[in-house]
Image (tube, rainbow, N blue to C red; front, side, top):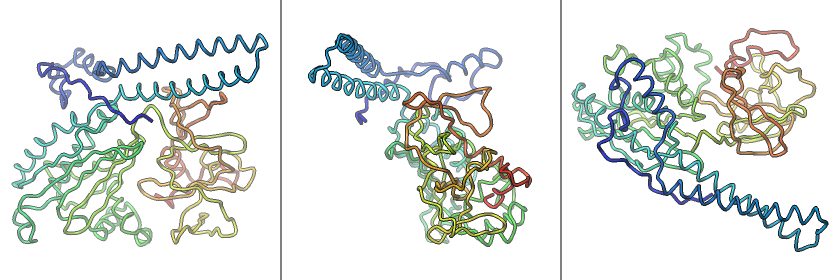
Length: 447
C-alpha cells in the first residue's frame, strides 16, 4: 500500500460557520434549511485537487492496460498462444492488479480528513468545564495531523466530548486533592490520535484519581446489573468494563455538568457502530486511559471467512483474537454452558449454527477466539475459507438483524457479513428453547 500522503486543502477562513470544523446543528437556522444544510454536510467533502489528479492519472493507466488486454484477447482468439503472448498476458494482468489496488487506495484517501479539524473545539470545552468546577486542567492534543475517514470524524464528535467531560469532571481531582496527593496542581488530559497499521487509535488519558475495580463491582451489584456470584469471577479488566453497561454510575450524586454517568454505554455503542472497540486501563492515584481502536476506513472491512457446512460467512477481523482447534474431550460444562480453558481462561463455546438458528449437522472442529468489550468467547465453526478485505454493500431497509451487509468474493459468490454484536444480543435475550439448535439464553453467561 502506498504510504505517501498528500496534504489536504484547507479553504479560506471566510467560509460559512456551518462549514467550519466544530460547527454544531444549533448554529444553523431551524426548519427545512437546517435539514438541507445537514444533508449537504453528510454527503459532501472537500478534496485536494492533487488527490483528484492522482485518481485521474490512475484511471488513464487502467484504460491503457484494458486496451492492451483487449488486444491480447484478440490474439489468443486468433490462435496465437505462444510463450511471448502468454507472458504479455500475465504481465498485463499483474499490471492491472497493481493499478486497481493503487486506485482503490487513492479513492480511499479522498475520504480522509485530518482529525485536527475535530480536535479544535475540545480545548474550549475542557477549559470552560474546568472553570465551572474550579479545577486547573490542560487538554493536550497529540496527532492532529492523523487522517480519518470523514464519516467517522462526524460520528466521533459526541463520544469524544463525553469522554473528555468525564475526564475533567470525574477523572481529575481538585487542586486541594492533588496537593494532598503530592501531585502538580494542574492536571493534564491528553487527547491523542495515531495510525497503527490499518487502524486508527484514539487515546483519552488523564492523570487523575483512577478507578477502583472493587468499587465498580460493588456498585454493579448494588444496581442489580450483575449478581454477586458473577462479580466474584471478574478480573480487574472485566470489572472496569462494567462502566459500559446501561445505567451504571459510581458517582454518589448526579453532576450538573457531566450528567449522571449513564452515557458510557452510549459511547461504547457509537464506537461499535464504527466497527471499533474501546478499552480501559486505570490505576488508582495515577489516572485512567481510554483507548479507542477504529478501522482506517468504513468502506473496506478486513474479515475472516468461516464455513458453516459449505456456506461461507464473514466475521469482522477486528474482533478475532486467534484461531484454534476445538478439543471436544477438554470441553467442560459450567452452569449448563459448554466451555474451554485457553491459557487459564475459562471461555464459553458458542456454535455459529446456534447463533443463526441453523440445525447443527456435525460437531464443529474449529474455534474463533473472539473479543468484545465485555468478554471473550469461542465461536465454533466447521472450517475456514481464509481472510479477505470486504467491500461492504449495505442492505438498508432490507437488512435482517445480525447481518451488517454483504460482500462479493473473487469467484462471484455473495457472502453475508455478520454483525456479531446483534447476534450475541439476540442470543442472550432468548429464553431456553428445545434442543434443535434454535437460539437459547446461552449468552447470559457472557453478559
